[in-house]
Length: 273
Image 1: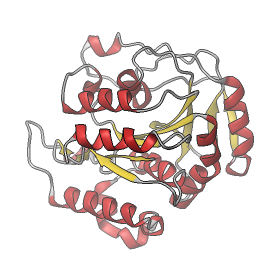
Image 2 (image 1 turned 120 degrees about the vertical axis):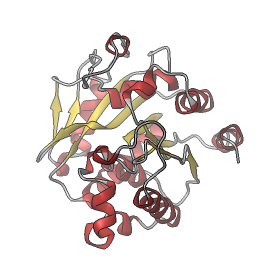
Image 3 (image 1 turned 30 degrees about the vertical axis):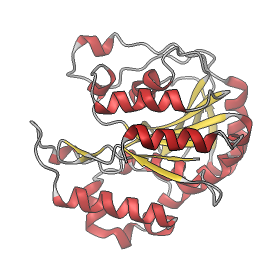
């Protein structure tokens, strides 16, 4: 099934529901934000098929905390260029969306048991704006970010998603941005073939997610060396778990962009609707 056919299926399914979908996008290289490629085109196409939300809550791989879950409560989140060594054109990118301070403060309360705190120092990092600029290019939907607690167990990130699930009925789009496989030490430049272990973990993740087996996807010991190869650090994995936790048995799961980029970065994305 082509991307166009997949997204038409999504659009048809959303027409029968008042709930917002939940979305996880494999964002890959920051260069995707300024390149016309299959990934950026698919994000733009997805944006044309998604309903317009009242607000967007982003869980990005690039806002990491330790021992707390921070929620950005600023009225005007700044565009953060959290990378180096890229063309100046990328540093000129801006995504001037408004924040959602009142909703963000409510999310702090919802996540009180997960050591949530309000924060006014962050903004929108490239895990957020590099995909939002294609989904909602006018930057006119309120957006705020939720940090990922690197000290929390994998299962706790699923629980955070479950705690946020009710926001879907209030017009909030929960958007995760990371990568199902993310090992920058093993990159293959110049279009090199995917590593066997990268394809294996990507397939394992898709199969278990399709079965609703989040227990397997949060079992570090069970995933063993394969998981450690796919994720030397878990930052790009955690947003996928939060998005999966925000889904429920009523949802249909749709995959898109199921490709390995640069040998060791999975661009697999998924939508629950």
